[in-house]
Length: 84
Image (cartoon, rainbow, N blue to C red):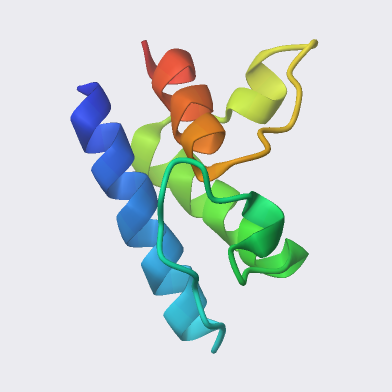
């Protein structure tokens, strides 16, 4: 999958999950901390499950030494690297 499509899918899913879970999503920038995004752990669990379905990859289980991304940009890069 092309990396721009990965970014688009992630941002689309972030917005959908926030809306469905009635969360106020902060403006999405690469340097936005995931902790400050407005989403909680349930939202991220839903997001990761949906991204595994749509992108066909779960970078959290694909690597034994994976560290959790801190920012939105880190999160997107994490998926872009796993999808290649």
